[in-house]
Length: 253
Image (tube, helix red, strand yellow):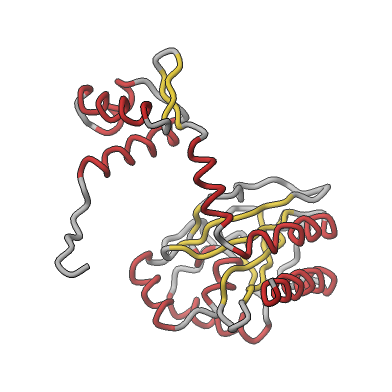
């Protein structure tokens, strides 16, 4: 809106700081939260009291935790993405067919957000749980999305988020990443080789809507010893099958 201030509301920001602290510390007492945020006990207590009253924080034995109210909100936010409902059963099939981890990721606010994750029989669980935020440039999923976003949007994301390293193998050079995105468009798939998590390799393909706009990506990931740098034909076939079915369902949903 014209004239609207870009300055955050301090009280709202502090409430979210407290919520994020509770998540980071896996629950905490009042004094622990105050020390972590360098805030007076009285200020933190007032925020906690309101959060407890509204059901977003629960208290047990003087220890505060984030409540399951956020699960309800998260499920609602996820359900608004049509791609989730369409892709969920196909991600399950992809995990079962490959015996590895299969994931669905979307871009929001310049970062990647895992929306769904399924485990195959011999998969090694990694931190790809729904709601997990990751840097787009450090994942095969994110690079698959970046490859098909408008150049102006990619530039905006890079300017805002940068290219921070996640491991020693993360691509942090802008020119190198631009070249890789071109290769992804040529081959139709993206790979990250231990670029976000050491020892884990991931292969991903972009998902587009009926208008040809990229709206997400699906992947298979597993130990680098099992997932080759040059994906085998069977793995790529499974990924492309999943991509094709999800895109068809999206077009006719």
